[in-house]
Length: 159
Image (cartoon, rainbow, N blue to C red; front, side):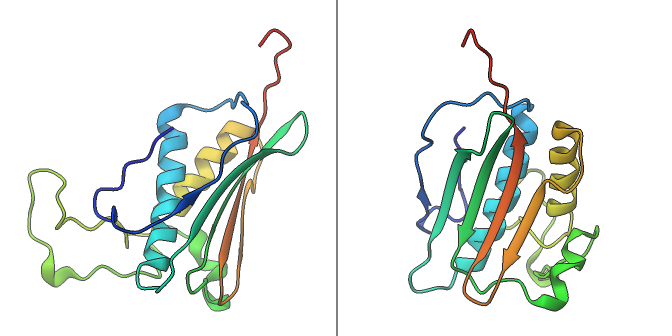
């Protein structure tokens, strides 16, 4: 899966190689949405850092689960915001409405973040794929944020 960065193309990030191929019971569009939202948050967190770094790793935990870990060296999420980030319309990155102009299509002037829907919708998608709850975990301090996404692993003997 390739994610294109139009607005933040100049910011570096590091993507680790997956050790093996796994079959994930997901719909590509929804997995793209989940990864895009979380990576977008990471890019925003490291945007003004002198040495920005975002690491993406994927590994098989066991025959049933695959872990996707996205870690950045941004400023972290404040403790007072950790429980609130799962609420709709809650954002730690408010939109600057002075520069918004009406657009017929997406453009560089359209805000990519600040609406407060990315994480709550991502959690719904992941929970739907896994038929269980709380499959996205976030651990944060003032030096880094790590997002752990747990997805079911389908190991098929004929693959």
